[in-house]
Length: 445
Image 1 (cartoon, rainbow, N blue to C red):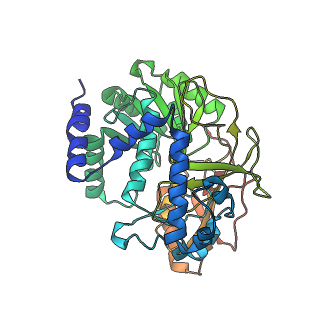
Image 2: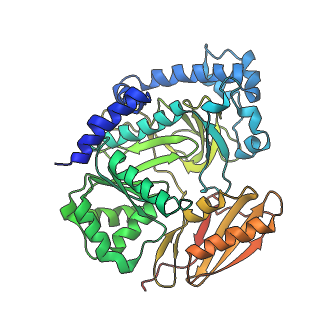
Image 3: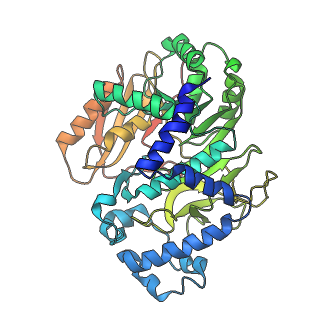
């Protein structure tokens, strides 16, 4: 019996709900109650409320005061131009809700998959709805709040040894979760990873697609004996060959999650293999990349998201930079949530050190966030021993640039990293400005 699972579900969550008024379980129950019947109605009501809030309290959207929002919320939304990150970055105070006090705001930054992190604000309610969207999707696979999870993820590189120890204890005993760092997967530790999996016996794995695949390739043999409920891939495009590798290695369903740090969990794969939108939390539009006109279902375009849960810093019709399409066919699972075709792009590179160690490229993004002068960054690895760090700064700061270079170099032993300050970084063909790219195939040491 998993005593920690019982502890998390019957002690930790009830205590959080009683003393900190945590509403994650209540929000999850609300989403489960509407997924088969009322999601569209909830979305319509929330959209009207959100746009009215924008009109009253957010300077950037004062023009909505002259629009009949309640009569036609979706029509009112279409009167707003799609919102690029650059517009928010130019005048962030124009997008803040004037009614929410500073002490209630949670500061965050978008991830680096586009190469340009965005500083934004959230509220606790916002975070709870994001978490609820994930837990609803996980529940489709019989995964509950206390289910044992092994995450292949980015360990917090900014923590000291004692802080990291406390972090791991909290993860283990408050979330029933163990984190395996994606920043240092080592083929020489293959047997140790296998022992960890057999000892911990997770109910599911969760992590970056490329990092999960790296772990699968490193393991000395497939591990069907784990009897996992699922391997959940997030934060990157899950390629068919990656899905096949994970399914072979772990003999369980491979589940795709689609989301963004600055938009929440937008879609989750159901047991029928279709990705359902979190319709109650967001309005997701697919627009022509050039004209920004809506495209019909089945046609790929750029993704614009209106987050209906973020009242602190609303961003209606926010352009994520991803390419995706809506699937016009209904899903046989019975959930009446819209279906999204698997998004294209959004993949960080997996870097490889000369000794064969694999390091997830999101490390570059995570380190660069600590330097205020950094606007864009990309590490281009041309071979196992050499890489070039491209850097765009809002103001020239040689000290910060060198400090970032030293941090990256320290975490990529054996790789000679050179710095080149540039005025801009060209996007990939997909439109992404990736934080890390590897220009050679992975090699066995």
